[in-house]
Amino acid sequence: MANIRDIAKLTGYSVSTISRVINNHPYVDDEKRARVLEVMTELNYVPNRSAQNLSYGKTKNIGVILPFVNHAYYDQMLSGILQAAFDHGYQISLLPTNYDQELEKRYLEEFAKRSFDGLIVTTKSNPIKEFFDYFQYGPIIFCEEIPNADVSCVYINLKQSLREAFSYMKEKGIKRPGMTLGRSKNISHNSRFSIRIAKDVYPDFDEANIFWDCIMASDGIQAAHFFKEQKVDGILTFGDDIAATILQQYRTNKPLVIGRENLLISEVMGFSTLDHHLPDCGKKAFEAFYHNKHDKICVPHDFIKR
Image (cartoon, rainbow, N blue to C red; front, side, top):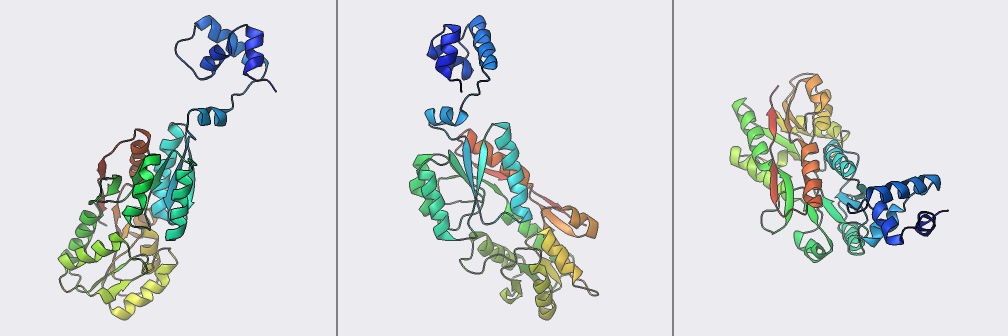
């Protein structure tokens, strides 16, 4: 297998000149560059990019921490990250946690060992202070709003979008609203302020009308039975697929249901949805990593009423 020294011997140029050509260094004579590329082709030489990246202290790999991969919310965000990473010649490593704090910490230790050039944290399981010691190893971008810490984040305006959704329910005459939320153990910051906003719009909002641990579409079956028993007449859900599953369980007296992320199913079934433009959020998160931006960027949303 040919190496740089073989190319240097055949061209008569120095190893440093060959290296500059391989790495697209701008200050190389055109004639020399052409001759080196010609010999590389003759020898079927392919540069070892992994070795090159290590020599620059870069892996060209970014870690993406997320709770799980089989959910429309994270699929959409990942699509934006993947496209931006591809455009810049980066690979991504998916680091699912299933909300396991210890597993998340192990990923941070991998980052400290330079397994990744940076991290995008779509949703964190640990308190933000657990991340502070790892900022020295490279950019860490959070995809949720973290107002009380000097960190980089690209986030959706969940507070405003939820307020619009509950206000819409009120306009439509909903008297007994409910909602689905995620993990009931280690309740997230987002879940806490979701409840707070519900109580801002509906001061008598009953927390007994929250169906917890509703993450996948299949969870919507039990959620529907729960809301029927609670006599809930309006439901804000964690996703369009959950909203669709809930509506399927009603034959009559269907509640007003609001989904999230504007999937095709929401258009087909004709229910309202919050579109947080998650692919754009993922793309901007990668760009923040790539350019090492230290900003807090809010991605605008649309409330699609049907």
